[in-house]
Amino acid sequence: MLSVTNLTLSYGGRVLLQNVSFDLEPGCIMGLVAPNGYGKTTLLKAMANIKAARVTGAIAVDDLPANQVARRRARVFYAPGEGTLLYPGMTVGDHLAMTRKLWRSQRSIDDVARACKVDGFLSKRVRACSQGMRQQLTLAIAYMTGARYLLLDEPMNALDPTNVQLNSAIMRSIAKQGTGIIMSSHILDNVDQLSDKILFVKDKGLVLFDPSAPTAPASTASPLSSASASTAASPAHAAPRAGAHFASGPACASKAIDIYNELYL
Image 1: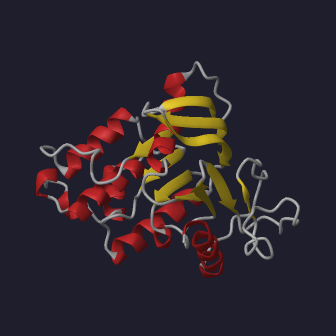
Image 2 (image 1 turned 90 degrees about the vertical axis):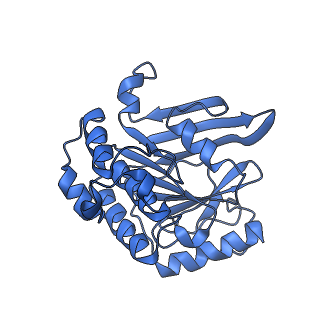
């Protein structure tokens, strides 16, 4: 489990998130939603031990001690958006081969390339790729690592509807194999039907939407009055239940839209 406990993030004297706690369980796909500028990227980088802000609090990776930095990093992969992970002069195939070597991955380059529909472009240099192709390659690199936890920053940006569906299927497949995924977006539509749970950033805190949780009593529900009747929307400092059954789909997406509208509109 990738656990965040009492985490505070600040940048340039500005507090982005304050005393937030949540768990990303293996096999769970979690959405992280908020408008731009709310600290989504900074949070994902902190979870991957990439210093982008002043951090206080604790981040635990499974049962690994804090001093085992290399082993912790080998289980968590952060994929930035907009192709910033890529080297323009290298080919698509070069990127996959380098990732496989660096991460000592057991996954086949050919298998990942075929699954991501980039097998016909392995000899193409990144500088000649479209923005959508660069994003597809970034996701292929994430899948190639075989990391236990994938932190994907705006992963559906620049993808056409066909590739959105393709990557949704891939993420669901690897989640069933035990990979935990958190994917950020400033657009709810990009994550709501795929996510098992959704974290909304609001007022330097987090609100958790967990459709698999029982209805929260009125006394413990979040301030979202419209959500408390039929959904589990609550402050995200309560640890998720072990062995939770994850639920997603159109009905859950509809409830998530209600929460989004109440938080941001």
